[in-house]
Length: 340
Image 1: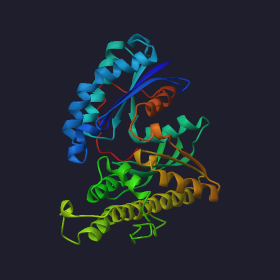
Image 2: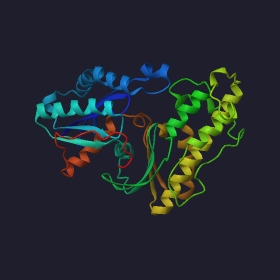
Image 3: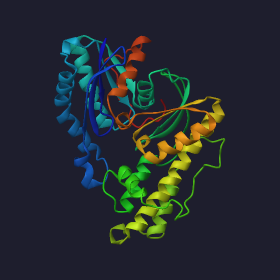
């Protein structure tokens, strides 16, 4: 069985063909970083228009790399939730059109579940049941994952996602877009103990939620003080930028690692799977590995190429196909949903 998967939840236009042995036959990811760079973040209208322009070329190149024709496809899968409404619609309309024209089943993919399934793709052996931590620009969620299609939300951010906080603090520090990778590179040269920053909600083990807005505000106060936003007038030394970046990164990592292991304790599970764009952060991966080793927890972190949004993780559609869970052509998008 050959399944075409489409991913357009935010600002990457991606397609992949995977078979029922979880082999990736071909994949393409078209980034929009250059389009959004001057705005310092993703502009939804620009993102959706770029998806429209790129969808057919991405599909064509994906099939070429897979060595297949449209007639060789047995199903079409698409991420329909959560994400930006306009972006989701482009992928959904493309998937519906192909499914109807080829007379093959349509399969709905939950973007957040797919991020955790990326760990299954990389691990080889089964990773479920597990605690799933999804850390990205739009989501910071913890799930009890009893199976690839059985997710229960344990906690989520009550304000900013971790990736969003990374991007905003990077902007305050005058670092280039995309902010998360830029801040992480700056932090390598910094002292994480140079500034004392809060670890929100880390001392509440019975509540598995996150909060990063206050941490972001604490950095702002260190830079300009309360009520001011004139960051463009700041003249920060490279050392101060590096130290603030390192201190902020360490605080975020403390919260993510701490809450993930609180979730393991609460559920009694001994496997942790981590996915999403922020899972590419080297310091987070290091700290997770260290604590997992100390506590004899099986840790699976999505490989670097599957952390950011991509269609390969849409291979979770094969689990739905095996379960007989197909979507009608009336399927609609569900933007901004945090529950899997």
